[in-house]
Length: 344
Image 1 (cartoon, rainbow, N blue to C red):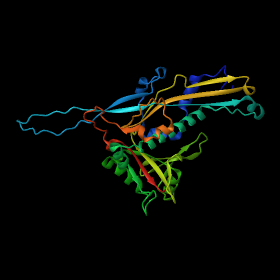
Image 2: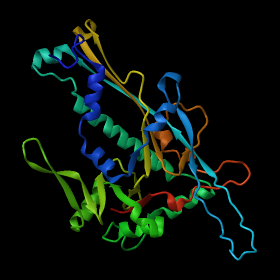
Image 3: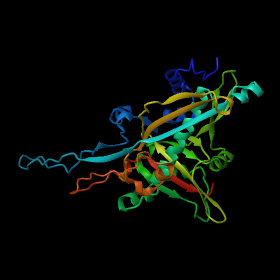
């Protein structure tokens, strides 16, 4: 039977097939633990009541100066504060229409299968994450600028050693987190950068065995023990006689992910008259991608931010205590997000 036969189409079953369909990049992201699922927040953002933004408290680490224990010195106490972490829902929708006539004249069924839909949305999610990271590194203001400066390793302006080499990644993550650099687990880079380090024989690409038993290489490898994903949607800047390439480096738990869900995530519509008969599949999703320690701060009534709004640094800020008295910001050394800018 045809995939979208109106009498047989089951949207719940189709949606489960989409969720279960394998995607190599998504699987490697999850295995690296750079993205962690926090599904408990979905209940705070039900589609039925139009929820699109929540503020989640982040506990401040306990601290304070220890008192001298000598039998005569009073013991002082401190209280734990919290940081306000704003999270915005990103909603996206798309559909595909196929005319009966195409099948009649070719004998082929052009309607997308569940695995194709899954791959489409995985690509959309990856572009969303890249848009968020671009916005994070466009933040302004004192605390935000400090994060951007300390978590950016820009070698593009150097007269020599301005391309990615064996030491570039290690130097960049040390600048960002110092003795915590071991938290970094994943790098996302442009194919030009990936090609350069591959030519230096620094990359070991991962392999998988397909259903026919043939071993194939995928667009994911390792460098200095960190997973690499290759994506030509990475930001590039024209530097005149050269191009600046951005590489993002993520640590474990760098981005928290919540699948909020839509009231009707997938449905099919049949119009027997239009164009001699056509079938349309509609899909929708609502998800949260929250960089740890970085808060969405736009309160101008945005229901679902566009990619351009996600790339706007004014919409992001390092999470702070936001109590109006003693404002403290989330420690930037605890944010496992960095970028490296090179000429390739």
